[in-house]
Length: 357
Image (tube, rainbow, N blue to C red; front, side):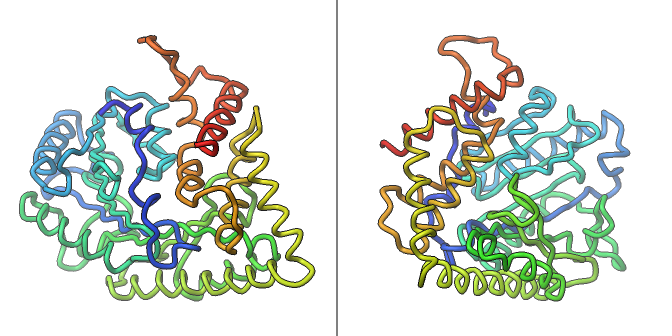
């Protein structure tokens, strides 16, 4: 798969309105595994990394879940392409020490992504629409069991599955979910709500720009070492439901009484600006798209479909926009050389076209 094909691909969760979909965009289960008898990627020599990469990619290729998947070798891709993977949430923002021996295999709808030789020999992530932690974890467990039968994983009877990050030892599992909580942010209740997540053994981080308490927030299981899968499921589900309840209460408060007019006005103005802007930054685009999604969740009859807004949310990020700036018929093209001003002009054009359609 060429990186521009991945940049144009639409994740399956965008078109699927899963459970609690007004607040939860996706849920993800990530498993980290290493190979027995081999050094972890950060300490392995080139021959060991090449051998592990070819073995794991071969075993992945026979899995039915990966049929039609695209494979990206990071020794061919550069730092910009790695950035694009990070923007899609398929890889961490801090890149591996030896990227030229890494690879990524991505299923057509991005429900399954496998990173090879990133931090661990194999990092499997499974993504589902809405709040679906149990279903996502069960899919991950089935896939992992099949891969474990084909590969000899590093395991210790005292520590469980071994990982390059000690906090991921044991199950090697982390559960996360991306939430949209604009009403909590606008009502001033986000700080208190997010602080309470530590009591539920969950952490959180901002998804992209937007300040300390953003509209988009990724929550994840914290301190997984020593925790079993059921405990982690309970933690992520409790944290998500806590924020969902708080967001819906804040939504009712913002869209009722004297506050309703200004809240509705923000959503309608966002539609107008997105549909007519000739230049728009990534930060502003995310804020306006968030306002549109907020209005749709509140039941406003906006002239934008939720799926279209989510598609723009996923594809208007800087590396994605730059990748789409390749002139027609031009073979040699460096997307990293595209300026911020050029990206802002193209982003506005893409958004106008999408909303018009």
